[in-house]
Image 1 (cartoon, helix red, strand yellow):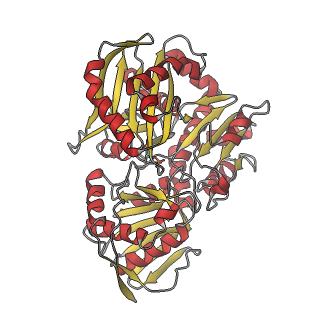
Image 2 (tube, rainbow, N blue to C red):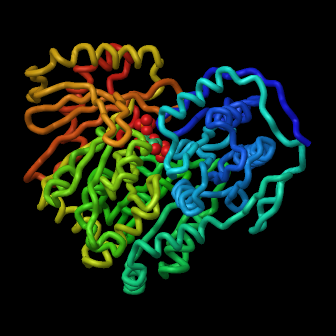
Image 3 (cartoon, rainbow, N blue to C red):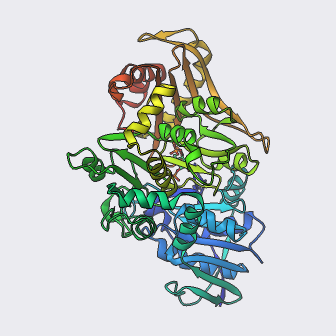
Length: 539
Ligand code: G16
C-alpha cells in the first residue's frame, strides 16, 4: 500500500567528495535516509519509468536501507531496480552494471574505507547515467531539496527476498537480483591476460590478497583462487562483515597492519594487496616493499603495453592535484595528454567520456581506467600481476626500474584530524590570503617559487572548481593543503608533501620529507591554530 509520510528536513545532507557520509547513529535517525533518497528522486525530476542499480558493501544498516530504498523506489514509480544478490555490490561492479544496462543511476551504500558498525560510519554514493558519481551541480540541487522536504513516498509491504537470483515484482516495479561477481569477472577477463597470470601462479608465485572483511572477498576468491589458480588461502578476510570484524577497511600501511607485517616478515609472499570497504581502493606491496599510490599510477601508465586491452595505445592520463607528479613525467615521455583535477573521482569522468584519458589515479589509494567510471581495486591488482607475469620482474624491480628511468617522487600525506571545522576553515582562508606574499621566501632551505589556489577548469563542461592550495618550491618540491570531504568527525586537514630526487632512491621516506613537513606547519601556522605539533596520521 502506498504511504505518504510527513517529514521534517535535516540540514546536514550535503554530499562530500564521494556521496553522503555520516556516523551510523546519524544516518539511522528517523526518516534520515528516506529524506535523502526522496530528495534525490525529487531533484532529478522523479524516477518514473527509470532504471536504477542498488547494492552496498554489506556494512551495518545496509540491509535495512536497501529494503527502504526498494519500497521508496516502487512507491515513486521506478520501472526497474537491479540489485546485487543479498544486497552486496562493490563500487566498481556497480559502475560496470550501470553502464552495461544503460541505467539512469545507481546507489552504493558504503562509507568506503571508513569503519562500519553502529559506532562506525554509513554512506550513500549516488551515480548518474554516465556511471560516475553525481556532479556537484546535481548534488547541490539534492542538498537544496533536502532542506525543504516535507514528505516522502514509500510502500507499506513485507521485505523483499534478495537471496535468489532472478526477477520479481514489487507493485509495478521490476526487481532483478543479479550476481555482480560474474559481471565483474567477465570484464576483468576482457582486459587482462588471464593465461599469463595463471602461468605465474602455477610457477609458484606467492600472493596474498586482504579483502579486509569487506565486499571484495567473493570477487577476489573467484578471480585469484578459482580462475587464476592462486592456492586456496591466498585471499584472506574474505567474508564481508557488517562491522568489518572491527577492522578499519582502509588499505594503507596503518590499517592493513596484518598484511603489512606479513609482507615485511622473513616469510613474505612475492606480492601482497588489499582493497577497501567497497572495493575501489587498493594497496600494492612487494617483499618488504611498498608502492605508493602515486608511483603505482605512474608505473601502470608506463607499462600499459603489457595489458591486452590497452596494448594498441592509450589516450591521456589524469591525477588529482594532490597526487605526486610522478605520472606527469610518464605522460611527457609517452607524449600523451595529461590533466590535473580536484580530489574526487567524479572529476575524471568527463575526461574519460571525451576520450581525453584512459588512466587516472589519486594518492588516496585509487587507480582506474575508462573501463568504468569509478576507481577499481581489483583491476589495479590484476594490472600489477599482469606486469609481473609479462616482465618476470618483482614488484620492487619494476618500481626501481621506473625510478631509474624517471627519478623518484618521495611523497607522503600528513593528516591533522578532528579539528574544529571553524578553525580549519579559517586556517585555509587565511593561508589563501597570504599565498601571494610567500613567493620568494625561504624556509628550512626550501625556496618558494609560487603559491596559488588550485583551480580546475573542466575542458568538457566548462565548470570551474577550486580545491586546495599549492605551494611550489624551486627544487620541484610541492606542498598541497586541503580539507577532506569524506570525514565524519570534525574537519581533517590534509597536507600532501612531495620531493623529487633524480639519483637518490634509497632514502627513508619520512626523513626525506621531515624538513618539508616542518615547513608545511610553519607556513600554515598549524600548531598555533590547531594545537597539533605533528600529524595524527601519515600515509
Ligand atoms: C573518495 C573519492 C576520492 C578521494 C577520497 C578522499 O574516495 O572518491 O576521489 O580521493 O575520497 O577524499 P578526501 O581527501 O576529500 O577525504 P572513497 O574511496 O572514500 O570513495
